[in-house]
Amino acid sequence: MTLVESIRESINNCTDIKNAMFVYGRESDTALEAAKEQNIGTFVYLEPISKTIAVEDATQTANIVIGFLTQDEPDSASDAEVSEESTLSMEEKVYDMETAASLWLNYFFDNYTYRINGAYTLAPVFRIKNVMTGVLLTFSLIEPKQC
Image (cartoon, rainbow, N blue to C red; front, side):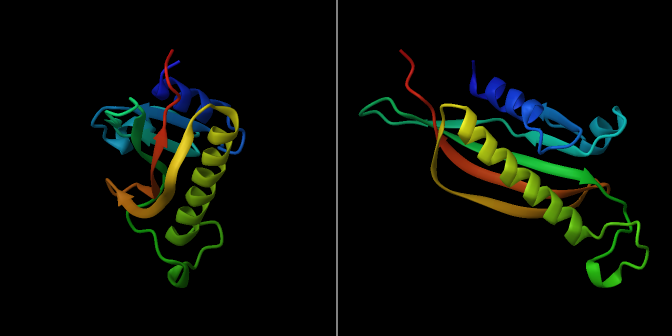
């Protein structure tokens, strides 16, 4: 199973991510892709994966950038500005996506044979294409050696 297949499978199998839609490796208008499906809770977009290969022992390190996004509105507000109880603020949406990304990351490393290389980063992103808010998760992982 390839790394992309493992990530796709883990996104689909992780019960902590509600109504996920996974997209990989192409320039994608997130708003259009998400609009094709009804009831998406989390839009997961995996950027093309770059790899570094150590010459000494052929260890492969994959650099992962994966977005965890949710639907937003062009006029969404910060916590201080939210007046409707039914509308989540941008901060709440980012927090929800941080939680989803962290839960998925734990699931992935608990259930697959990859190891994280160092730390990971969660960077908030707001109103991508005016309609998606969430986080970009970046990390490096060490792929298991192939026989």
